[in-house]
Length: 380
Image (tube, rainbow, N blue to C red; front, side):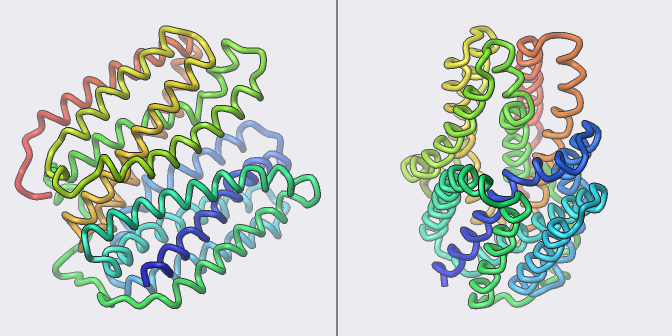
């Protein structure tokens, strides 16, 4: 059963990587309007902020596997809509909806995972394997896309996402779950005030805040390289490739870092926080492409390990509410990304990108101290 669950998600993730590479090009070719590209960016961050809570409440009322199948079927429908339409607004609406259903699929998948795999050691192993296979698929998709787009249209490449999602659905149909329906009375609707800033909530908020460094690279990495190098395309391609390697290594190295006996300690979180701030300070002072790529590689490596650490803490501490806490994390991470995308653009226009990096470091330091000093209740 575990192999079917793993295969289902790996196929799903592989399709998503093809989508990641082509959707920007598809929207750009429909309308070479920068406003449309800004709306596209918002289509990826706003759903997590706006609908994660509602999706978690919907999943409460459904069979775990049924909700996973439902959201993936809806994803297939809107992806077909993108392929068939030539209207940029219809395509953007479909992108927004696809992201909404992708979040629902992920929340449902977390519920199915803790249902199918209940042994703690097996959960750790499964998380590592899924992360590793997902990153391997991304590394394979990069050259595959570069080869395919020479012979077929980008919409045809997007069709591969549809194909992989359908294959994923077949695997999901074969999965048997035991908790057929969530207990609405026991779990209740998702309300942020019910999380009490306990251990898990504080960990989610701290991790989400550190993700501003991932968001910075996604939004402004190419701008940083362009500031100090003439070979922007080569530098950015190297950065994207090496970040994929960092994610893969993070999943492999997590075996030696994340152990059941150290989950109750804050050492991993404190070590991650300190190392990331120190590493990010280096390229803000030393303006060199190689230095930037190496430090961002190390930051991504730390974040990859920390992501698995936070995920397993949620799986083992709050298995019945895993989808709700995942929704909270999605809202927090996307919220941080949105603030970075909007505020960062204005700030960088007023000052240079290097000073903005220093502002980010100082802001994260202050906010992390505030989160650490919030009184922790016994609740998770």
